[in-house]
Image 1 (cartoon, rainbow, N blue to C red):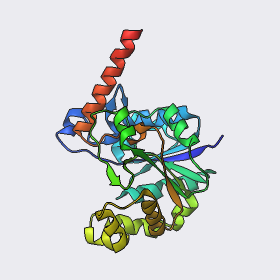
Image 2 (image 1 turned 30 degrees about the horizontal axis):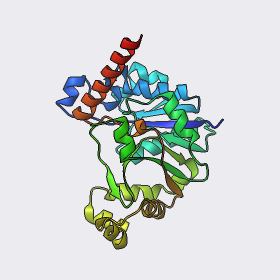
Image 3 (image 1 turned 90 degrees about the vertical axis):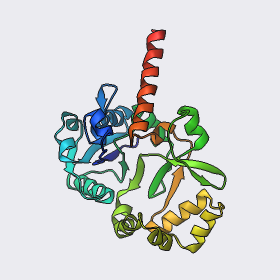
Image 4 (image 1 turned 60 degrees about the vertical axis):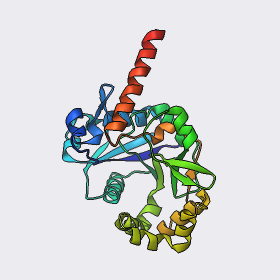
Length: 264
């Protein structure tokens, strides 16, 4: 049975008035059903039976929280998501991790369970440097009807990105300069257009862009082999970024508890 080590970026912050309602400005420390998001994530990874070491890369507030003790290791976060990814990789290298590939798991998915993690990992091929879960719009809306979410329209379907990427450690280290270049340009329309190339942009604007086109472009930009993974649990795509996401998730949780009480 495959076992992967996991990096949990936990430096995400939320702004008022949402932070005032939940009593923290850290996404990882939002309470959901009596557990912090951090604890729910770490427990789900442990319950899956497929994850070994876990390193939390977070703010001092996160690292000093009692739930951080559920992780194998703790590292203070850097200035960006790529920084945090490579800080986690460096930690795993120092402690002698033997996992050829690592999971990158955000700490803001309230519906994550051990069963969902196991099901996802069991569906993955083993011949790619990076695997990214994609959930089709109809799959997501069937599981979370009326929920707030953003989808990208491609030729042949609409998709939303899931969390929990599986990445080759060696390939990531070799591709670090390319990853950092993409992140540097992510907020610049001109910069991203130059990176993507005129043909890619034209196909996107004309709505003729396919999922295969996107996969090829990512591989060429990052110098990695990779693919999207379809048919994965929609729960991997539900994250809490703001008040609307949180309110919907809490309503779903309350409804689920009421149904349990009614049948018990």
